[in-house]
Image (cartoon, rainbow, N blue to C red):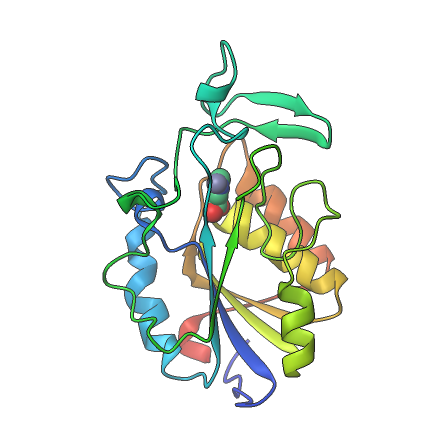
Length: 211
Ligand code: VGL
Ligand code: ZN
């Protein structure tokens, strides 16, 4: 995809979870996670509208391996809403790990949507929690603001970015995944699986240089 024009009214840059715990040295570090920061900063100037998400868990959150007897990070448990991957404790509300990466130039963002704040339910997607029914409110906000196309960036490609992209498609938004503005966790082939699901759902893939 080459030379996409940004519509300053209908297009929005959605910046997912660019937080210290997902960057090198963080509790759930994504390989090369901080490499998205300069890419997103450059892209940010091209958009009139930007929204950030922030993974925002209470201590003892049910997605933490440490909350389950014998639970192992990157293992899995069955929650009432289905299978849930267990993670190291990360993005605990009010801790430095939950802060945005210090290099992220996000002052102009119009909304920070926090997710994963309910102890019994995780939320990868910026739109619906992992029960796939509890809304975060972002869909209504974006619709009411008149945005029709969302450019997705951030961490991690195969979890929060992919779940957000799929839900955005379900809600009727056009979605462009900016590939070099994302990095993946890639657990057991999760990146390839996420790409396939996104492609099948009509997500477009682009490079930041083409925007
Ligand atoms: C994420 C795992 C757990 C993400 C958040 O931002 O992709 N992944 N919490
Ligand atoms: Zn999380």
